[in-house]
Length: 277
Ligand SMILES: Cc1cc2nc3c(=O)[nH]c(=O)nc-3n(C[C@H](O)[C@H](O)[C@H](O)COP(=O)(O)O)c2cc1C
Image: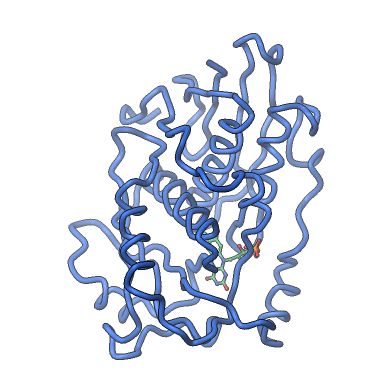
């Protein structure tokens, strides 16, 4: 295990206030067709405040640098190969390349995506289908050993999805998630832990690969419960996908009154083991 781990995941209980986190998780969906309108200054300022306050998973792993970048700042050159249309602003993330930094980055960027969803804004994780050069240029200085890892359009959708977007969703089977029982073992779906895992099942993942698996052991509700995650993928975005899953797991757990610490016995990045506290 990297020494950088802290034992306790740091989450503010009050972080999402307005709406139930589970409702926000259900409502979030990738949006690839935007209405061409810019977000106003107050909304951008609110997003920038949220970025400063994002919860993190590890206390002593470097945090990613996330900025709101406007299309105009890059002379309209922020290309996504036609995957996204009508977006005037993007969230852009620069992060380090270690597995721990990628997990942390996935965790924090998803926290921001959920916050944006709460603010009635639409988003779409992009790890592959964007032109890195112009985004890096528009981002500016990002520090040594960092690269632009993820971007997301942010804005309001058109009332109807484009044909290309509907096709894309069909190709990656975006509306289909693997059954609960194939992903998670040891906790009934309607138990508090099961509900937090259901929130993981609804998480976005690269190409909808859903690499997260876990086994729950120990007696429920007596401080002995252990949730051992594993990662069924070895793709370029697996560590980020796992960070997203931990974000959903810990935020949904909090709403169910469950708190976890990261067990030192975790088998290694990006798989983590959580112990009930
Ligand atoms: C790490 C990551 C990278 C992704 N990269 C892309 C991408 O390059 N292009 C794209 O159109 N969608 C991308 N997606 C979006 C996924 O395809 C989408 O989340 C998945 O199909 C599930 O659909 P949903 O987000 O609507 O639930 C990415 C998602 C994640 C988590």
